[in-house]
Image (cartoon, rainbow, N blue to C red; front, top):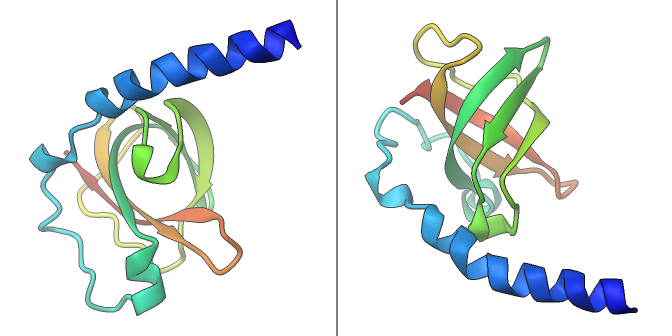
Length: 117
């Protein structure tokens, strides 16, 4: 119980710092096309910055900072890339990118678009 209380206290103190570190107002999303998205996709859409670690067949391993809109801390993770996701430019491992994450019907997020920063 003592460890749980300590963990909750750390998370409570860390949350404001995580929120303060994410500033999406300076990101350029003008190259991302939202015109084909459904209302449900638009409602669950989030933009974030990330670094591409690797690209696979239908997946990308990325490292991103906190994404407070969906309650995610900074992490490295594999994300599915939607089959019709536009990827502008020649994106390769090590590149900083802007991502458009779309929440699917299953509640999971996938990359709906990726462009170099």
